[in-house]
Image (tube, rainbow over all chains, first blue to last red; front, side, top):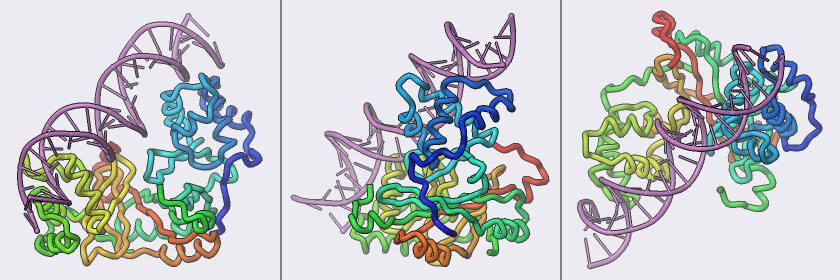
Length: 159
Length: 159
DNA sequence: GTAGCTGCAAAGGTTTTGCGGTCTC
DNA sequence: GAGACCGCAAAACCTTTGCAGCTAC
């Protein structure tokens, strides 16, 4: 369970053509707004609020409503993942090849920094729950929250 | 990790006077709306949407806005716990003595039945994350989702 | 050319806020 | 009687929907 920072503006590991190829494969159209959205998401590899994502796009590149619709489409085809941190609405992150596997996040409750936790111990737990409860197709949603090292020093008040 | 059904209208284990005593202890006023809310919650020991909770109250007993305000107050003093299932808004459940310990839920994605899972394996994981990341006061939010046995038979469509 | 996509406007749903009147202590 | 609390109205958000025009294929 090694934390990994997912701060923005890292080298982008996913190429845009790789992403648009997936759209083509699904017979979805490669439009300006969709390219702008994917371009923004690949440069910011952590869960973004819809309005944050929209703010990243150049003025006039894409309407806010189109961002909502695109997230719904991309989620349905598995290119983005919906994540809930419980404040301000749903967040979305690109499903990259390296981050394709199920993972969780560690969120600072003061500054909202996000780290990615690479492995998950709960797949076995899901199987156990299925056996004990009779439920099927059991999945889970798990996020961790805490105060990051920087905020421990500066004692930023919780927003 | 033994599932436990939390269907409604069980015998209520928490007495109303026990609950109002907690209010008095915090110098909060024991009003009609608050009693009605606590009375409804102790008879329905599973996470309720605000509007579900409001619907349980007799006409005119309590305004919807007052339910919102009460949940905020009661959460702050630790009498209710906020739970997020990701649809329809926040849910709240009474923090009873028997269910005081941290626990999780198993939610049917078809009929929304809720079972309570009594133990949690993640407290040790939180400590490990603190050591590895430098974060402090690490907590987590975890819920399980699946299809319950009844819905497997009737193949109810996902709402 | 056609189906799908977009922008704009408007509506729907949840949650919060302001304010005057009411009630608990 | 004072402060806390409530109901009502309205606003603030987040999200979805309808529709007419535009665009990628």
